[in-house]
Every structure is written in C-alpha cells, then in structure tokens.
Length: 324
Image 1: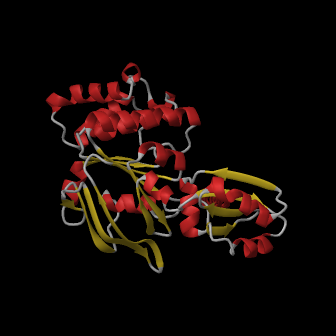
Image 2: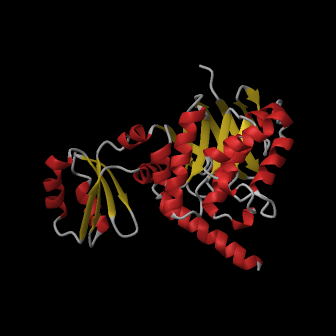
C-alpha cells in the first residue's frame, strides 16, 4: 500500500532522555490520524521530526513519499503545519499573513489571490481579511492558521494540539472545520491531542503514546474493545482487602487501584454485577460506564491521561513562575 506517512524505528534522544523511542507507524492517504497522550509523551517531537523541524536520532520516515532527512525540502513542500504555539504576525492583517505564506512557498503570483480567497472562505473569515490579527479571538486565529497551512495545496496537514486553550464552544466549531476540511479536500491529517473527546470525534485511527513509545494503535472502537468489558469504578474503605477478594472472581478481567477507588473491568455486566457487589459488601460509591480512551490509557499504563496532563501543566506553570 502507498502510505502518506511511513515510519520505521523513529527515535529522538537528548543525551539519556528518550523523547521518542522507536516508533513504527503507517498512515493511509486521506486518513485523520491522532496521536493521543499526556503532555510530554513525545507527540510534538514526533510531529516535528515528520515535518523536518527536528532530525531523527535513529530510524526512517517518509512523508508523501519523501524521506524526511534526505528530501527535507520536498517534504516541506508537501505538508501544511499548524503549530501548538501561535505563529501569526498580529501586527499584520489576515490577508497580509496569507500573502507572505504564498511568497515563502512560491505560490505563483497569478494564483495567489484566488487561493487566499478560497482559504478564507473555507474557514469563514472572508469578512475579516483586512483586520489586524491582534483583533482576532483565539478560535479565529486557529482557523486562519489552518487556512494558511492549506495555501500551497499540501498532501499532508499536521495539527499540533489544534484546540489547546480554546473554550468548549470554539473547540466544537473547530472540530467541525477539520471534519469538513477532510471531506472536501481529501487531505491526510495528523493531529496531536491530550483531549480524549477530540480524538474520539475526529480520528479514523488513534495511536496512544506514552514516554516516547507507541503503546496502542487502532480505531476508537478497536481500542475500547481491548478492555473486554464495562468499566466499574468503586470506592471502598479498604482497597487492599477488596482487591484480594475480587481477584478470586473469574468474570473480572483487570483491577487497577487508583488514588481513592478501584477501577474494575467487568465482563457481562448485567449478569455479573450482583456477584461483584455481593463480594465487595459495603461500598461508598459506584460508577459503571462503557470504556473510554482514558480507560484504555489507564489499562496500558496504570495512569490516567487527565492526571498526567494536569501534572505536566502544573510543572510548566511552576517553571514559568520560576523564570520570572
């Protein structure tokens, strides 16, 4: 099969730190593929190597048929990139930002006006093209960055945490733009995210990444089926004692001990829940739900994506405060 992206043993090391540690991955043309994981897992580093911003320490990768090391110029011509951090010039208008991008990518002068108009129309910013970027909301800036990434007609579009920092309503609107974009342009889209709902909503397939390693790969449904049952979260007085009792039950696939509760993967919930409750005796609280991607991450790592992302955010804030 002719893949849009073909990665073999891709790694990036900084001394003894393995930011990305031997990833193998193939992404089909026209696919929306998501790299899901907490902050610091290696998502942005992986994207940066594929976009030729970082040189791999080991391994190989081709993007749109071009090697990221030997043919970096051709790769750059074949991709669009929306960075995690804002990259528009807010002293210029939307029109001026897009004109600069066209010049940098050698878009023919005769085609620039039409392409800019088309890109602005796609993200519904035509009526704001002459306004300074500093007057744009966060969601409008992200939409314009996507428009900019499409001006040179790329085969692959990279979106690094595309909705980071946006409010829920704006995030929902941006998801709709990305879905429409994929349908209309038949683009291959690769996005990184630590939002499970975003990965569920947008991605045909998801790669769960942690500590630089790809630990799970598949469609959202395929990943959830790995758990082999429903998820029961239960709070009890003595988790150690409860765990010892539950391990004797054949219909329990896995037990994870969290900070204040047990997470139990339960087969045939309707049939086996009474036996579970009888074994536990007194419980303080009980929640039953179908598996989520957060549950899948917990299944593979023993940690939750939410918790890891919150910890990473706290570390980043502490670093910022320390630098002031």
